[in-house]
Structures are given as C-alpha cells and as structure tokens.
Image (tube, rainbow, N blue to C red; front, side):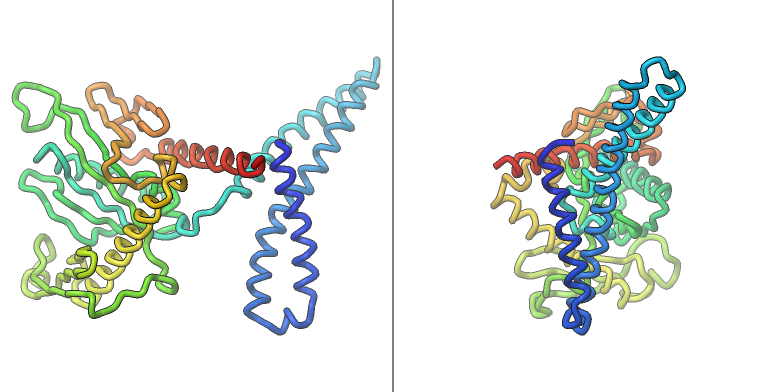
Length: 366
C-alpha cells in the first residue's frame, strides 16, 4: 500500500479514539443533535478503522508466514502450511486494500439520489428522434435490471416514432451515482429505416442526467419568479387526460428555465413533479456555472456534464460501442442497446475512482 494511503488511514484510527472519547462525555450525550452527528461520523470512521486494523494484522501474518517458509528447510509440512497462509493472507490483503482505497475517495453527496434523465433529439431529423427512443428504451431496461422504478414525466413524440424530447424520472438506490456519466452527446451510425439506398447516416442526441433535489436542502425559489401555465395533455390517457387541463408548465423567469409534466392525472401531482424537475435544472445550471469558474474541479470529461461533448458512439454496422472519454470499445452493441449497460457504467466509475485516487496522491505529496 502506498505511503500516503497509510498516512490517511492512520488519521482514521486517531479520529476513532477522539470520537469514542467525545461520545462518552455527558455534555455531548445531552445534546442530541451533536450526539447524532458524532455517532454518524463514528460509524463511518469505525468502518474504515476496523478494516485498517485487519489489514495490518494480515500484513503481520504474511510476514510471519514468509519467515516460516524461509526457515522450514526440509520440513515439507511446515513449508506447505506457510504457503497456504501466504496465499490466504495475500488474497485478503488485496481485497482489503481495494475496499480501503474506495472508502477513502471523496464522496459526491448527490450519488445516492434519484435522478432525471433528459433525452433530446439533435442533428439527424427523424433518425435522431428514433435514436432518442432507442436511448430511452436502453435506460429503461437498464433501470429495470437494477431494480429501479422509472416513470416518464413529459415527452414530445416525433411523427415517425421516437421522441423529440423525453424526461424520465428514476427512483432507487444510488441512481445518480450510476447514471451521472451519461450526460453528453451520444452519436449513432447506422442505416436509417427511411434510407432506401442503404447508406449509413450519422445522427446525434443529447442526454442530461440531473440529481433529484433533496427537498430539505433544496434551493429556495421565489414564487414571484415563476409563471405557471396549465394546458390539456396530449397522448395516451383516455377521456380524463383529454378533457382536463391537467398538464402543467412552470417557467423560472430570471433564468428562462422551463419544466413541464403531463404524466399524472391531476394538476396538483403534475405541478409537484414539474417543480422537482425545475429545481433540478436550476441546481444543475448553478453546478455548471461553478464548474466553469473552476475548470480544474472538472478536469475529467466524465464529470463535466457538458451536453455538447461527444461522449459515445453507437456504430451499428460494426456492432460497436465506443466511449471516447475512457477509450472503451465493446463489440456487443445490440445487447447494450437492450439495457446491458452495467459494464460501461462500472468502467466509468472505475475510471473516476482512479482519477480521484491520483488526485489524493498528488494532494498528499503537495
């Protein structure tokens, strides 16, 4: 294990002792807010410190077994026992090191949140809209495999199928942490269904993934800054959806940001969902502006969320998916487009973890 990681872990062990002392004090125990805050920190620190203690113990076991092997001479039983302990300790040490590295990485507080996926057709006309529909199906099926719940909040269908724009809400465990890397430009290369001469066309869509705001800490929006319009929803839904002005569109006047929802059967529920989307978009705008002011904070393309970036190409003639940010190429496009996206997501998460670990190392050496 690298020295800077050992230094970080030693601090966790020291902090654990401090927390145990603080939690034993009567004045802290009487202050419930402070007690709960320290208790949560104690749980997190103890989890790291426990693994660090085990890691050090297994290191000592490994060194002892190696000494035993060296001194075993012609004693085959002793040598065999030493080799078994060396193998066992080495495997556990590698596992613990990986866990400890992940636990030391900075945590994005938004990773555990639900998310909104916004898909918009770009260049390519009808083919782009069809590709937007393919992306919606890919994300919906991936979410289903993860056990996450999805619902379409708003959509604008194209004439030949697909979508000009569609907004999907995803609810589940660590949704944003898995999907946040999807923000950016997605390019498709294939022969469109409308192409009569078999020529390959290139089209594009943009995807934006937004963390659903925490209502307890969400930004405050002045009601006077909002314009709320109601209108009759379009699309499937039967008599109710066609006869009432249940769809809601909310405009944030200072920024011009708009959000709408027509999926629910009541104006009240649609307004609540539209406000969530609007808040998420305003927060994302603030996040992007902070990132622009501090380019070093978003040096990695993965975290940029810049919708103009071409992050991925879906080449159907070659059955190839290429993620340009990490130079990942997989020749199983048809299964990926049907929702088998986990390998791509895990590769992006691993890349981000490696970047964070490198930044930690640089910071430790500064």
